[in-house]
Length: 166
Ligand SMILES: [Cu+2]
Image 1 (cartoon, protein in one colour):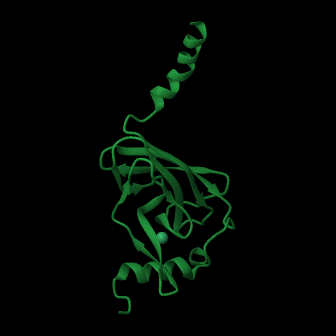
Image 2 (image 1 turned 60 degrees about the vertical axis):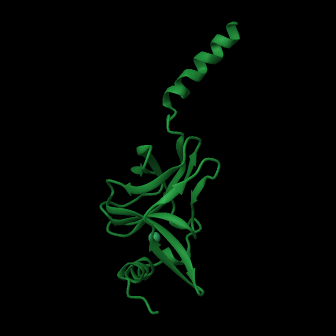
Image 3 (image 1 turned 135 degrees about the horizontal axis):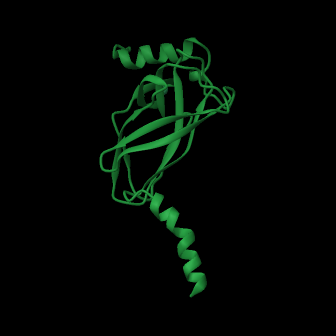
């Protein structure tokens, strides 16, 4: 009886913090970037509730933010905006290098390794979920497309201009 009570007391804070919608976001990380550059955020979304959809992202550190997908277009790696991402129970959605990611356009301040910054994700059912991204060093397994000054800029000019070669 007593141990049952203790267990309940230990569990209570966790229950209070758990999102009733079943959406959980973790492993939220970013890369060190100078102010004015394009930043990137990776994370994992798990859902233990009803099927939901990730429809938007925002962060006070960037002028704008959006969901992106890296695709292999006949051997050429490109990025394109993604309008929404379904988050189905039992199938964690992993935003990771080489696949889905969050792009931070127009960084208002430098992202310094070892620091963190806030980010909000918007879901159709769960609404707005606030998370914290941890900044890792720039050299952490960075995909080629995000390297150098020309990479991200050219990528976005190509993928967003909608005038790519047919
Ligand atoms: Cu991107």
